[in-house]
Amino acid sequence: MNELLWYFSRATGVISMVLLTTTLVLGMTLSGRRSARPATSTVVAGLHRWLGLGMVVFVVGHVTTAIVETYVSIGPLSALVPFTAGYQPLWVGLGTIAFDILLAVAVTSALRHRISERVWRGVHLASYLLWPTALVHGFLLGTSDQPLLRLVTVACGVVGMLAVSWRIQATHHDREHRRSVTAQGWS
Image 1 (cartoon, helix red, strand yellow):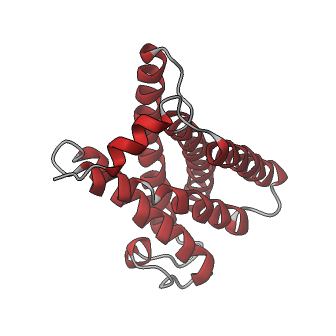
Image 2 (cartoon, rainbow, N blue to C red):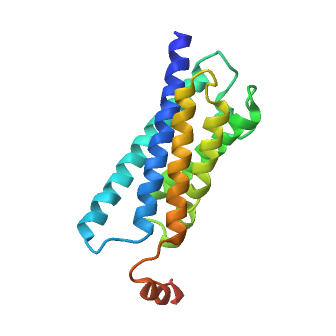
């Protein structure tokens, strides 16, 4: 049974990384250069939300099975407080930081219509830290004797870096209007 939990933990971790990268790319598409067709943006936003929610489910499965399986010492406290695990505290701690950021992004996204846009956006920007932290966690704690798992993590890294590079260079078609709106005071 413990071996099954070990495999489940690794599988949910890899699936989480793929979903996180896909969600990151979709989010970059939404925040970068947009198409002139609002219907396209609506579909991308819907995919971003649903895949993000799916990722949260897989991450919770990953964390839960990492705690329950007894091959390594990762307690419930280690899921929320970084660098407290008995096994590889630095690398597990990076996963914990990523999980904490994910929780903050998920909670503020669920409360988006009840909190200010500025707070939501500020917390949501933390996903730019979430992704590389989770990537390093997955790469360094990934199963070294399973090259396919490492390859998936590396592929996620390449795709994510391409998306970040594109986002840095991308501009909105209404950039000047956005600047004038941003310069206005918000209450």
